[in-house]
Image 1: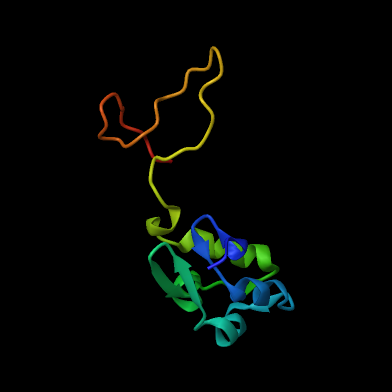
Image 2 (image 1 turned 90 degrees about the vertical axis):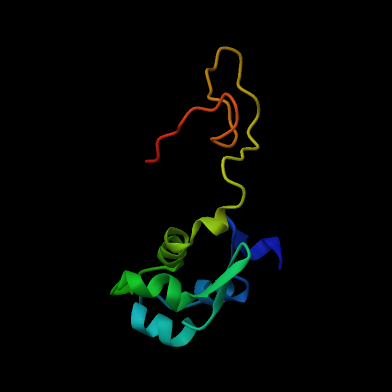
Length: 114
């Protein structure tokens, strides 16, 4: 699987190119009739496009960006990779940043989800 069609742990493969070249706007029904059985990789699991965005019951999608956002909103935690991992640079001088790591690690405090 190439990194070219992978974003935020989600592997669209050839489906990305097909959705980008789709004529918009397109109804969700037409979209799922055409591409509903296409598999989307998320970490070690896969789901069909219909399994992911079918429950949203959208009337239509105006562009590829709306479909991509719908997919990203519906993927499971499996797609995000290692939790609490950051490859950000160390804090700048004077910056007060919480230590990063697993919540159960020594020195970690509970983080609130938003």
